[in-house]
Length: 310
Ligand SMILES: [Zn+2]
Image (tube, rainbow, N blue to C red; front, side, top):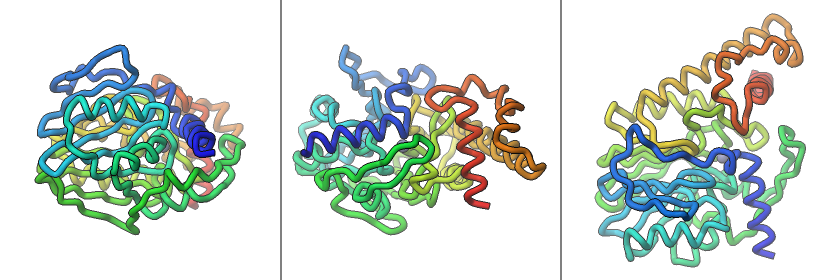
């Protein structure tokens, strides 16, 4: 039963985040040192200060290694659990102490059960646990999102923010309300100046916004504004999907989403129907950002989100 439920979580993640189609390419612009590149699907990129980013299918994983053990952000899919743990074991034998889920999607939390089996405590915002324990309709995809097995649910949850003191780092888990979902957190490692944005940030791609899962375009834009208060030009930013980023990448993505919001809002104000807006092809100049979410899907998501939050 557990296996079946985990698989369904993976499928949800695949649909929700476009994980298979957004396997992150290796970064060439901002990377420091490639420690592992093999024929395996999951690869590790060293970021310095005991930090690593695990790339490959599913959401990007952040790993902090130090004297207190291992702190992991997100864990992709169940079927990659052995590879993920193998990559971490290639760095250190220290125990995996915490795994934090940036949100409930199966491509970020699918290996929770296996991570718990190693002894890790899984931590997330309250709404991550709530979403994992409920079934609800995803109208954007016309399917039911089923509850997942309890073995995947976070053991420890918080209602707003949480601060970890681990590996000499002040780690701020900051809840960003109604952004990609209703349970997102961004994780800022203050001393190392590394920020994991979860799926509030897709680099080089139109973002998926899980409106049925409590997300909104306005909240996603606000999450960027919160993140931009934390970062500087030296900050290494791990997006949910896409290669390692810097502040300027986040600013450009933020600006794009604001432009999308303005264009769709203006069309709604002048009384245009969704079909009218689609016919006008108002995101033609951003066509290069089409992947799992293409420009028409982006308009549909923005339109639905704006009408819902008006
Ligand atoms: Zn997601």
